[in-house]
Length: 93
Image (cartoon, rainbow, N blue to C red; front, side, top):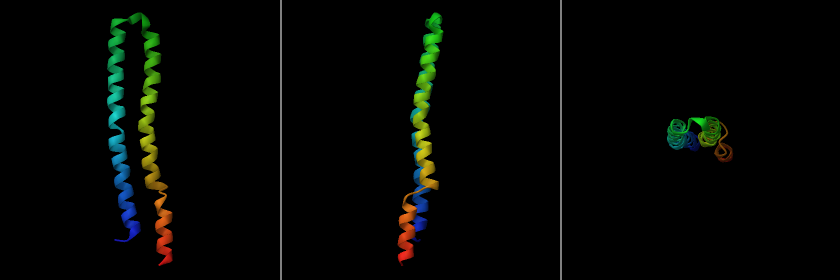
């Protein structure tokens, strides 16, 4: 296998692992946040507006971690910085 094939394989595997591992934490965090918010709403229904607003802000912050993992995986697949290095090495042969 040449270097470009190895870079492609490593990029795809790394992108897959980034999405797999990087989405576990946000998924668990969102589930726990929603469960806690529902428990709080059941105990204090008068504070529903405050709890809901805080929940949505927290969910947006939690979801940003998954979005960052998605962006990193897309960079690894479509805009990999190692491609230019591999192409320059191949052209020098």
